[in-house]
Length: 256
Image (cartoon, rainbow, N blue to C red; front, side):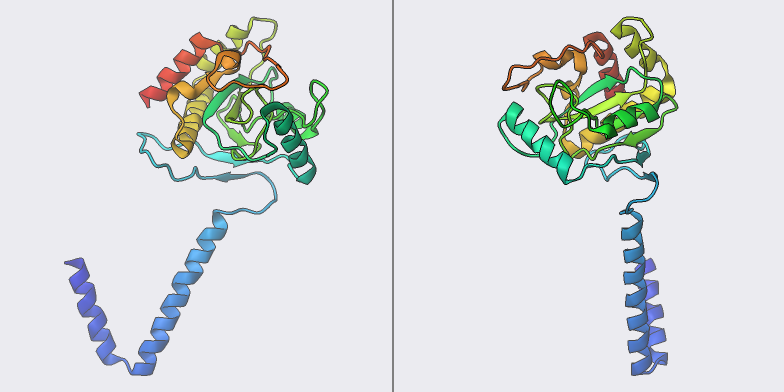
């Protein structure tokens, strides 16, 4: 019915306009539509400047709650670091590329109490285990629930030996403060705002890249993970996010 009423209205207006007026109105209308579209495209594609909040990408699978807002705060990842990354990938995975096509997510916690210290470490690009590039993860979830994208999830990042060529790294701000590694993960799980933001982020990444729940693992689980491979024979020695805590995290994913 609404379509019929609009059709009659347009027909009445057209009868009262001259041919040139109709043409002018049509041109103005098309220009207005194109102008709005361009403005929206620019809003969704920020260029440089300070960190900005962006909406999550459109997901192919519906959820009962929206994803978290993500603050884009990319570290410098220019030609030099990309070349270092491609060389690292060649040595460890047999393929020289800085491009990531993710099939899994690895959970970490930062062993620090602030987002700023983590970002500074990732941005420094210092050699680790005698090799460049420096370490980094794609996302950092602060204790107040703020989610930061530090590296785009389609760029290979060095965060988990043997899985960097297939995994997105998600860091949660938490230090162990002298306790064992499981204590740190339990603090995160007990911090409602932080763990809810992390679950929302991981669910969003799962939807975007088709990652199943059982491909969300902890750093401590990496050496036995499906697809683990490191050509020089390196192994992970981290104990953060062990199987019991990851099981609790996956339960939260499934509950959504």
